[in-house]
Length: 308
Image (cartoon, rainbow, N blue to C red; front, top):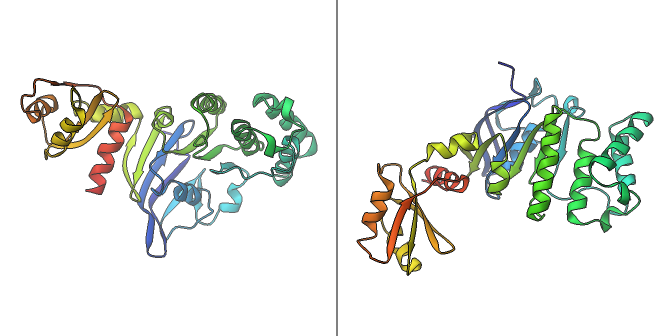
């Protein structure tokens, strides 16, 4: 088995009295898109900054591309790329100017820089916008420019911090295809997100909440682990039915999705559908049926256990 591209062992980071990451263990294999899934404030960005050497831990340790952290952040710069949440490039420079500037930061030889910039303008559909100011680009175009700048030095490992939070679903899907092109070429990615559809595209994910890891594995395996605990309820008065179900101790969560309720049942219950049917109290206007779990169900159940 090959060594992981990145791992953390009991890593902890505090900011004053607040713990942002608590005793986190992660193992990230090479050649995958690895997702950090969690709400705002769950520690995703802090994990990325610890793994890039921008922050030092209060406890524990990490290893990235065979180099221990803290202590080797400078040596890692040429091997990693980090795309932050916001657009951090110069809006008053052109697309071409931004790429030339970043190539200079990475000390790319002039010939290689020209080749890489031409390749990236073509790959990310920016050739026609090369002389436009970055500030005049759409959010999707700025996103592509940011990714092009992040990979200009051909890093082995990419960190993408909520890269598609401010773009539409179609742009998000297209961006995902670009990422898998990079993975096919041998790049490993660590992507933070709070979007379930984006997390489902990852090869593996870790669910973070309240500064801790709640679960990790492939999305398919995580969904299989909660098989049988999700029940769909239909009825005439969903608000009233939902309130009644929430009052039951064996019901973990109730959410209205359009004209139905999605009910998550506690792990202590053997037959979720029967438990929900009983909780409905024989209402003639309501029915329950077990359905397949999705990643949002996994997230709700995993974070509920951690909070509890």
